[in-house]
Length: 482
Ligand code: SF4
Image 1 (cartoon, helix red, strand yellow):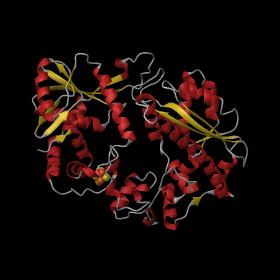
Image 2 (tube, helix red, strand yellow):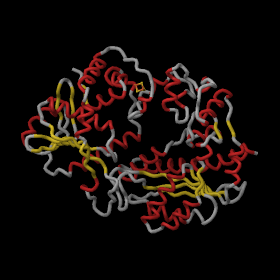
Image 3 (cartoon, protein in one colour):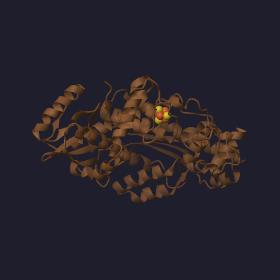
């Protein structure tokens, strides 16, 4: 008998085809990547922490559906909070986080590591309520227990303050309208031998990025969903049969940036706005410090002065170009201890960035935010402000489409710009992105330490390429405007 669980119900809300694949073609679903696994781990830690708010609570194990359901039913009689109880109703199975008894009724508490209530969370709880009530429980209120970003850790964790409990009962009532019809529809999908043939669209990325990449295989590079901030416009074009940016009619209204994409799509050539790039490049003040940070974050703050999910810097790479044409000097820092990296990171950076010359970063708001926070925490605000004031954002010429190459496919990310403009890429590196740097550093530093030296070496190579890549990008832009 096929069971509709709450995760499958949420998948079905996003896309019927995604739901169908989960029952009939599971091989199309890739294994969770490093980032997804990190998020699962964070979710588990938060779930365990939340249980401490209910010291009387009883854990219900999950060895099988039947055992979980029987145990949950039995333990209802105890009149104590239940952790992860499972109930079944009309082929729907729901195992929520916490059920709290209130006289002869129950409150549903759904725990999330996020910092606010999202629609998908309300749908999740609506499904739980439907199943629990169908199984005979009286539900009084529904709550979402999520991280409270007004909490800053000082000393021991204050679990009461770490979480925020939001009453979502009214929203759950609203989201429950039509729920039975939706379940019926999903059951038909599950029981159908054929794929429901849902086409791609905005739903593929919302509320989560769907992992079924094959649905996009029929589109060639630079399809209309690669239009910069395309949104509804991309969808309308796709639905009207225009699949590629180069095929968008001249009469179709686009934004200025999208228009650059259309032109480049048609000609297959790059776009260079010399008049916009030249002032940017001429305005750079030597020595140039090309700087990049790597950070990690955890839902539960690990150290004093952190709020939930706050980014903690653990590594930087810095290439210094003293004067036009000189060979870049490389400096780097990677925390190799097992505690709080921030003080060592700050001290090392202070000795490396000098006191004059522009500091070139890619997406400055990130680095500025990190420096402001650790500067404030360690009483180095003045220094952090002075460093932030020297920052120049290399993202700007690309985000403003002052340079665009069709190989960027609508993205201004350095991961797309570097290969498109310079011809170098991250291929072959052990670590290929910030999210992977975050998860691998966290794993070897605070979890199991497996392959630590290899991960350190991979981290250093990855971060070095980010800053050397920026040196190459600036050099290349200079060539383009000359
Ligand atoms: S990629 Fe899009 S269309 Fe395909 S299954 Fe996922 S959500 Fe549905």
